[in-house]
Length: 355
Length: 241
Image 1: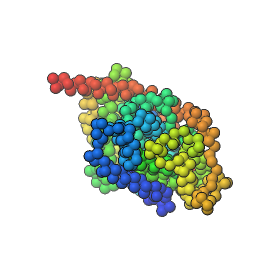
Image 2 (image 1 turned 120 degrees about the horizontal axis):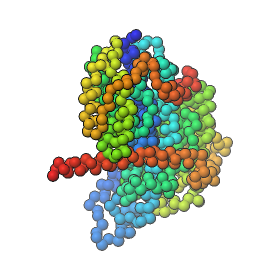
Image 3 (image 1 turned 120 degrees about the vertical axis):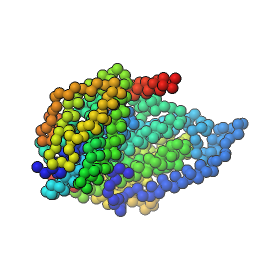
């Protein structure tokens, strides 16, 4: 693991969730072992067979029959996730050139590189559903598929890099750990790998903040300011409240999704409160308090109207992020064409030699 | 002049400035696989820079660590070659810079691996493997672009022509250094010439040979690069990160 050249603080977050990832991985292996030799007869009712597989907590694999709506839902979700990794390189990449020490620069470079790797891995998972990466990239560039709205906020100071690791990657992990048990095999396997790396990122972000919060008064102020700006957008990452969520019920039935938006959001809040205390930073919510009855923290909901505005393109950086992506894609067109032409030339030369 | 210190500093600065330039490609590369590859090479260069600058600081004995050397010197105190500080340009220029740099760094680190200074030898042994990959990667792109489309050929030839003059500085004598750079030229030519030929590119004629980097006389570009790289570190004197 590149750049992870510091010991983990004892109070580092992510331990419990990593245990869940490992459990999901074991369950996946068991499911694969159970499946052996169990192919449907030619005259099986495919729909019933699909329902049986889901009921038995077995995995659907690319060669299996699946309802068209299941396929479409997965393509949309996996593609959105892949796009988020690729667009998500920008806000953090913004600080690579100015990282305040060489060690931090190395860790940040490695992290942004991991995100590119996650993007590639997820596009490959989506391709198992019968759509090409080129098509998906086109859908992103044309604005017909979305990426996570959190990346439409700007990284104004170095502390934002720490907060993205701690809160944004933290929220992503809470969202993604249950996906390690998703009914679609390739997605579940991709998520297991992604979650393991994300937990390193979260720890690195937490460490950045820990150093700032225990540094000079200016550094501590920088850290608090970043937490103030990113807290509510991070809560909004879990999506609209359960009552307003359009895709949830069907996804739960298909075991693509395992917990509701509000359940995951609560889990995230409960996780962050103690971590913020250790950091010595304040979560910007005066209503935040332990509720003994619910055995959970009461908290203020994020502004869902703001979330809807950002999703619709009115966030501070929507246009900038898309323009950056389109620019990179357009500027690279001549390079991709050259690579294709070169490969064709080489293949032709080989054929001539063979003949 | 202290040979080993100056040499470690010069090589460390080469690697640092190369990493800084390559890091700018992150999220901007022509394809996603190339984003991963260029970031990887930037990380390798940065890793070598950290080892070399740390060692330079120890040789100097004035209490400067890698960050003091990277963040608290001005452009006149940097000792990198001019090649690495040139702007990225288009992808062809970046490829040309990486191609020539790695064709120099590979024999350099290989020679360093066998030198009498144990620390430099260990750094050389580690970095030469990375340089071999950088050279492979850059060579592949020189061939693809040179022998790709008419447009890519035109751009790649222009890039080679633009960067070539800055190659000569790499092989100037370096008094007191554990490796004599003049001895590396043959290996450089042996790596570069066949790839250019295969890529249907013309090797530029030698002539103008700008230099001065090793003496702290840089292009106008370096000061801007350092301003950006150092801004945050310098804004908080003495802070830990």
